[in-house]
Image (cartoon, rainbow, N blue to C red; front, side, top):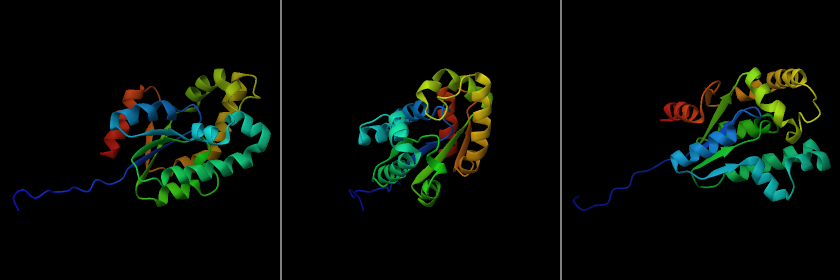
Length: 185
């Protein structure tokens, strides 16, 4: 009928960025959210706000098990909202509890693994190790490289289940976002 309003259903879309620490989840997440005009959340920042402590302090004061429990609860709470969203997770988020299953079971969530090779990760993380609880005890670049190699091998099972796998080595943030959007739309 003429003059009749037509409504188009726009599906809810939540993009969850996964990957090892230092893979660019937060940087890509902010830029992707601006491009899509979606709100952006960083899971680690949300945990720090909720707990009133840094991630490093939480690990040292309450331990990793406590941290992972809070992380899993907050992940689910954030993703159950009824809004479009880009969420950057912590490197271990999909590897603990039922987090990866939760991401895969929800049709409005698209998980994106930002895959980066070990030499590049090692180069990025060595100077940042003091602020990274899992590697803060490592002293040399060789130790960081070996730790990442072993740790990434353990976590790759979870990361590889993501809906999209985006190789980011040598790519700018813009190039990475373009790859994600190309696969999404």
